[in-house]
Length: 337
Image 1 (tube, rainbow, N blue to C red):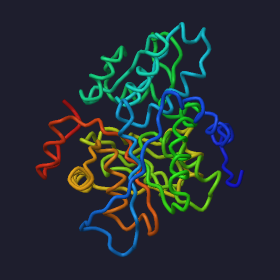
Image 2: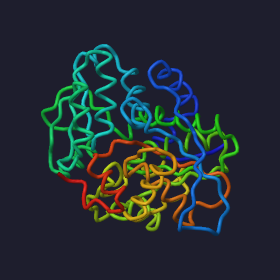
Image 3: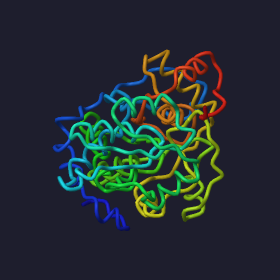
């Protein structure tokens, strides 16, 4: 491998794992388009860049998480499948795992934070998932402890499971296939499973390509941790950008995050809303706040650099009322209901 990284997850996940995942999920997960984005904006004008949108919002469940969920469930034994599976998710991974579990007639339980949007919970229930709502602090404890007392079955972590990361990395393989001379990739950061998976897939082949996380100002633990040189807690505040952000970088993810990512670009809620409105009006692409954050980072800050910049539009599951507010030029007040 050309790029080297330290830490158990980094040592565990190889380029071959990602290539194998690509073959494993190919019958179920289709390649998504990479389209050029043409628009003007009142933002950074110091760098000449070409922006491309990696449309992960076009998966059957409307987000990238189908890649990791499908890869993880296909690696389980018949005995594990028989006992059922469960996860903790703000919504998108809940849909992804429920969708994958349905193929095997497997029970799928999902622990969700109480502010999870109905746009993401409704499809989970329709796909046969069993939802348990808990306070955000309890949900975050499940994320950090990898278990929920009293829940049966195999826990599949939405972020740090190696099979999930490898599956997510298949998006990086597709980016290199379609744009071999890419300079920079910007990926929304929720827990690091997508950004690190993509970074592994790309940097293990082309280590000079930059891969940035992007976060929103109300939930930016990666930026704070990079500044501190270690994982630190962040004063998380819920917002309409509900698909990314948390209180901290997971300890098990930090070695991978710190080594494989080139930093984090933080954007404002206003910039995310403007980027989302711009995407809808100029490219006819509907994204959720997390997906629009990548475009905001590329188009409205000076941190992405020049050249060919890919923005990963991670998902499109946004509540209709929030989308209407954004299109009217407003900023939805929060992610709760």
